[in-house]
Amino acid sequence: MFVDEASITVRGGDGGNGCVSFRREKFVPRGGPDGGDGGDGGTVVLVVDSHLNTLLAFRYNQRFRAPRGTHGQGAKKHGHNGADVVVPVPLGTIVRDGETGNVIADMSEPADRVVVARGGKGGRGNARFATPTNQTPRRAEDGTPGEERCLALELKVLADVGLVGFPNAGKSTLLSVISAAHPKIADYPFTTLQPNLGIVSYDELKTFVVADIPGIIEGAHEGKGLGLRFLRHIERTKVLLFLIECTSADPTDEYRKLVEELRLYSPALLDKPRIIALTKTDLVSEKETVPIPDVGERIGIYPVSAVTGGGVSGLVYRLGAMVGATGR
Image 1: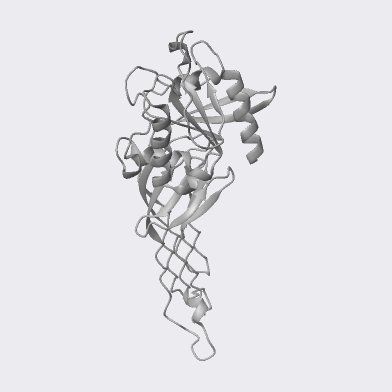
Image 2: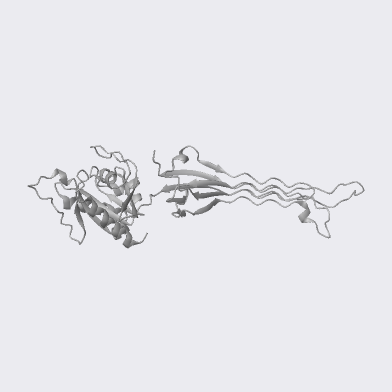
């Protein structure tokens, strides 16, 4: 099961209390204060785990609390600090404050880690309060509480190429042909209910990653269909590949509707390089001509058939060149 949203609560450990104690030994009836400090509470840290590709684990575990620091003791023994709690998240996770919605961290690099809840400070023992005028202080500090906050986690897949098209445009079939991915394929809308990633090899040792994501419908930018859950996953891609069935009644109108949904969601998406693949050309007879959409802009258009393989290699090499031109 692919889960790309989760809400969790994190809390740092409380600081341990300082100790009130006096040195009491044989022949030392009035020893000075020797209360130790409390230990600091542990912190909660999010770290990227490259082996994870979903937020499913947070469906079952939504609270993370670091242990508190231990209390100080006599003989100036300081309490131990609480251990940190490390929470693994998938690469591509955006961490937001659950109340304000502000972005705390964008976990887009394999080595990313961020402290999300700091532990409280340990309180000082009475040995810290001795002065020339008060040599037997009877007070110590309590540790401070650990930080607590609610977090909203949002996963955006990391891919070089994002497949954009209406349901049943042939996205999953194309991905299964050009990579080793095995997405679910069937002849009904919304077969793909979660993003699928495939690594595409070309030109010997060169590769790029393609994301097949649920199909767009009109109104997707408002959340219709799989709406916003789909659109967020193409924000990180470098290149957009629009897939349009060559048997469509109006390929030009279909392309323009797809572009408009992207624009309404985020105009920045239209700044990405893009090309068009006219799919299912095997359904066009030799006597017919594949209709080329009039998109009104200079854009590559590639008729392909995932069934026969026609035009696929040329499309793959073009995508590879575009990904390389954008920088990896």
